[in-house]
Image (cartoon, rainbow, N blue to C red; front, side):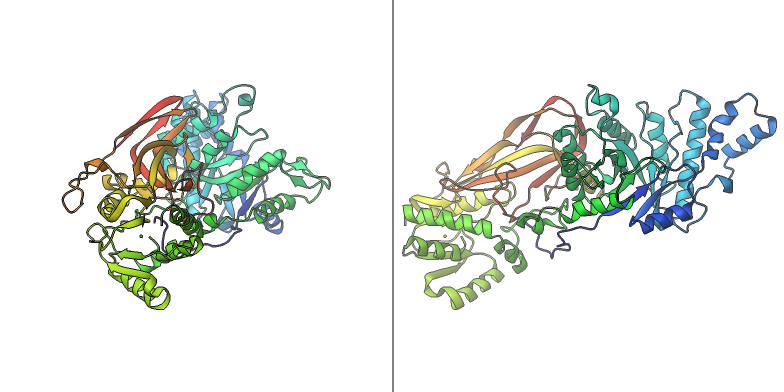
Length: 593
């Protein structure tokens, strides 16, 4: 009972993607470049902010032959002298809605030379300030070197001065020297260090450059937990098909299709005068990316239901405390998989023995050719009216409906089978154990409870998006609140481990003379689990799942490895951690209670 109940805002199977063009031109003509890109079907262009002539401010003062007047100009420039018009590629806001500005890649904010460091900072501040002034909303920043401390400090200090400019930092999937034997995690670790020094600013994101060689899948999957705003596809990674058109290798195709689900901005990066594929010209690259989008596999029932709700934090339902609305029940009733599994469990239980969803029981009884008496217990006053309508219009005398809390109902007779659907995303988090403990007194000795048991599992996950969503509330309470989430921008750092289990009926309960539990100590749980973290990652929280045995071998599950096919009534649960922690080749111990 954890799925959202609001109307779904997005039901498209083919999300619109955006593809931009980068020509790697040092002295582009803005009018001709943008006009050509539009004609070729691209959605935006990457353009340098300044011409190469602007580079003189970085190095010229280091030359001994610079005369007094030139030195004076340099000093005035460092004090905030405005751009010379001739240095600017984009001189006004005419194309601000069609471009991303590229910060000069020759700046060196971590140079051992003091003058170069200072001048580099002045340059990047001027360039980003100009983008903000003319209304350009994104800037592409160069990949940081290994010594990146000053670069990160500078970028972090700029955020407040250009509040409307999003900064995409270029990060390659893998470095060339990594291919020769070094670890495949260098670029991620460099990015992680950079964003940590920038205090995980929400305006800082990744422009992920896809390389010719791809790392292992577990390394690739880690990027899905990061803030991906752009994906750079160099033309050099494309192959030629039989007709000379550009295509990607099978493995690259698989990775790009996964990326499409995250709706990043794709960038085709080509050398202006370099060799391109023989057929189709530059338009063929964006056409191919759109082709991959159009030919995405059909969405499963679960994926269709989850559209628009990925990484959306929701509070778990509390049906014992709150009376749910009709729309909530309507959502759950659309989950045919769940009801089919319940009906199958009831059918087998009836065959073995001769109460839950009344229609499931009646249909299962009909299949099993058994005569049954069905009691439907409902505490929600509004929902009880719906049951009255059902009884009058459909069930007749086949079902006896009772308005009561199941824990306190005094049954006229004991039942052979007790059917309930009180499971939460973590199994017990909607107080199913407490409810069923109070209800099992009207179950015969040897009677059957459906579900028979449910087991909770947890796994450590990394998700900067979810962490930032919780942190945005700026209080402790939201970090101490569990959320129901359909994970997308998240990466599992280790496989789920079992933490505890509940069985029904529970024979280890101390009860009073009316059969009610004397206390709830039997439902307290404590567990310590150990995870082997094999790759570097940031721990942002704990994901929770459940697996339930309805009856014998009939299992209902949201565990990633055993998830019931096409079932969408439950999303996983997310326990955020207030302090994120970097993990690397460690054994992580986690205690839950």
